[in-house]
Image (cartoon, rainbow, N blue to C red):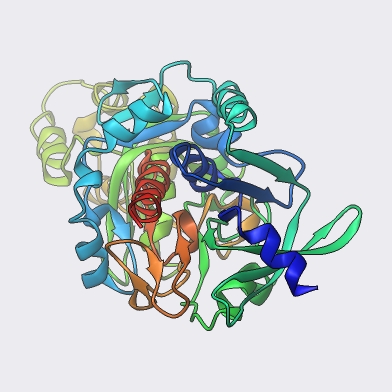
Length: 411
């Protein structure tokens, strides 16, 4: 039986487990590999999550790109990893992969702004690459390194279980079975665990805020640049956000989930106006018949202005000269320190990424090769690295795929 496996492996075979962005990119960056590359995924198609990233517009990268925008329980090793020149030269990787994009403020968006179309383009490159075979509906159940140095992987397929041997393995699965579905952590990370690796505590990340404040949720569709604060750890995030029928979403909210540790949350409805500035402006207009609503409308939408007045028990006809100090205080608190209460605990059905993964201490940060099972490499979200919203994780998928491809091709 093993003779059969050895004959298969003599052709120099690489198995890539996981056809998300990291797996797709790694397979394409191995086009010059002198052997066979197999891209496996348990789903019926590639890039399931990639098709919906960025609301279908797909953020590619960000001008602000450093270890500061990523989280890991091994912060020093994360900084060491980011010294690789591919992080600074990631645009060269995108060029090789044929990814076209345009800048919108600090974010680079897919030029077509059509993520499903981009996934279809990448899939076409995968299926036409001469040394690459795409194997869908192949769920990797187990991996074992044999005395020969080869890796034996067992798959569950529609035709039943099968076992194959490979010279090298790239583990590029994300932190979920499928998009927004974690399942049993041991099963998600069963391949690195089978190789002796340790997994940090994992939790959902890049999640919207879901809460039961029906009054605020009535403003669904209203967007603004604001500030979210975890009042316990004092972490704040400033960026665009939108009120939805279930709570809050948008770049600021998704990023905030990566830092949030408690359910004690405050919302500031403006990033442009300071608390003392608005207070001074109101007090400076206490002479005459200027309405408070008119002053608020200089900085906020009609819906938000009326919401602030309602929360402070003030009429839309209120004149600043008649504004009691107690009501002014309540107004200021509403605008700059609005409490978000009864927040739903973080959950995977509403998250985009997983925080945590394979410990960086067990990975060579120069090559992303396993220190415990040489011949196994890691790419993408499976490692204990998690970027903010705005193209960080897509970029990391491509960069880590390039580091792995370099290591394999150079060896």
